[in-house]
Length: 219
Image (tube, rainbow, N blue to C red; front, side, top):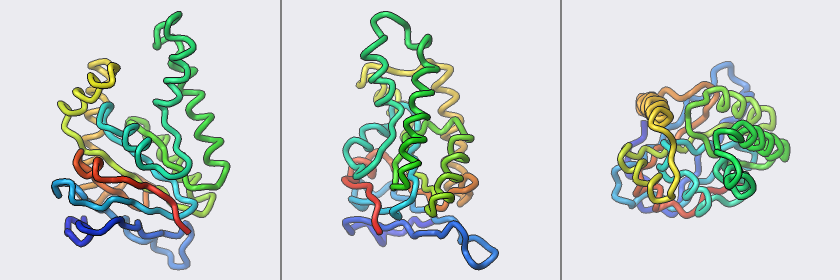
């Protein structure tokens, strides 16, 4: 795992491309960039290949949607945006639990449409649905790109505070489930073991995420 400060003062880093079907039998080793514990002195941009899929994951309240709104240049698919649209229409008449399945269906339908464009896309993911990353990995390979993770590693208390600040949170049971899944993912990435199909991962703490101003696709 790369914990060096080689990129601490640069304006951005480019995540190495990894072709979906290399000529050699062995696939390139996954790349892990650890940008935590730098006091916000990390890069201001993350650059990916033109057909790549980037998954931003972390605890509810860790700042995924905030980061996406501020930094993503290009297509972004945020489940929170989908929920906000449905809430505006139904929340006064129905509890969210009633129309939650429709929100999820609408989110995945929108994600499918975004993937079909062939453009680079950034996706919000809470990290509890492994099948989603498997699907995204297959889609990235199909279009000639790669799947990358951007993982917000935020302490649970900070994530809970983030939920309070936005005035909406998840249940205690759901948060504990997210917390277990996020902890497993962080430990795996720290050891250099990425989920199947992932070409790279970037670890961010709150300060590193705040320093990011651009997540974009090049080439």
